[in-house]
Figure 1 (cartoon, helix red, strand yellow):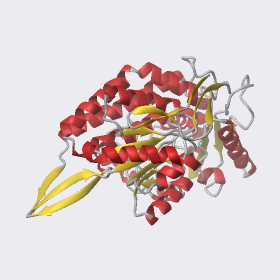
Figure 2 (spheres, one colour):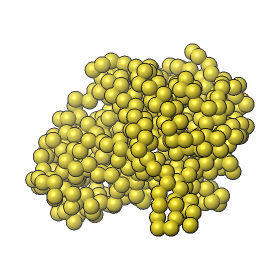
Figure 3 (cartoon, rainbow, N blue to C red):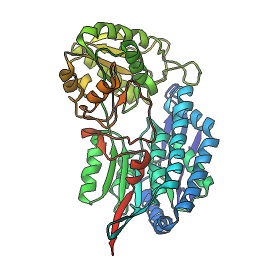
Figure 4 (cartoon, rainbow, N blue to C red):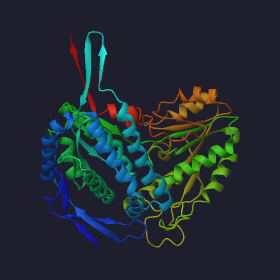
Length: 472
């Protein structure tokens, strides 16, 4: 087992100032993979100081110069796709096929999109007798989650760098190895010292220190709504900008006349992908009461195809959840649903057959779920789908909007016009129409308790810019 006691600060790997290490487990085997430094406030101070020292020069570089560095970073991601996928499979438990296509492929697509976007992006414009400048926001503190560890890093760091900001990254403690790999790629791309810095550590120590640091001018955080609220409150006291991508309890609404079988099958795949550890997953399937039992039967049949197994095997579609705490949390939600009167049609609280080791959860379908149940309101973050019945479109809209969240959703209808009309009634940041594909150039972010700000594409770049006008 490798032990890494260093942090990437100021363009080089330095011994961590924090005491102790964090052990990274393989969630499929429960064996130790590696240990990383448990950074503390002193490491954060050093990293922020390095970022601040580099900020003015980096922000003053021309667009073409930054474009050259980001192109090299993108090429580095492309060259190490297999290594990235294998690393994520080892520390997160994502099946290797999914890790290759999504955990490695999506960050590359996002980075490529920003290279293309930056080449044509205009940082100045004339408005009447004014010239308006878009300037870098300054030092960015990026705090990323474990569920899509590299994607979330790239979705924050690359647009921040493109905008001319410098960055201090604090990755999730469960999945720090791919973050270290990313730091190696950044170093090989030749970015100036201090432009990008990495501090590994636990959220309550290193993450809290980064979010509160007076020299961090913008905090970009992805994680739970509870932590996001705390960061926003703290930022408010310091008049600090925040970009928050938080939890979700997304609804997939199947309207009468839609292709029911396709809609339900796609929903099952959507909610079981990444072992259900996707904030935008459609965890609530809303079906008209006249089609309800048919939909439940389709969902149960589809769930049977997701057999938990070894994530390194090419045929595996469902791996473990990230850790024991998450496994127990998800099973607790399943039991709470059953106790409240939900009907179990697939899965359950017991360990999957043959899973003596590893943090596995049975892929679960709960029917007869009512909107007042905990499983219909709170983010479970595991392979659990709740199926609810609605009476008419007004009732469906009420159910779809009846949570504290508003991150994503889906609508299926016989025609696009009907689907779009319903989607416009949903209080959520992103809606897929009849199975529309994820677009890494479209703005991603939520309403209500799902966050503030947007990631990806032009909107994601603009999060890291501030505006100045000069009048003539």
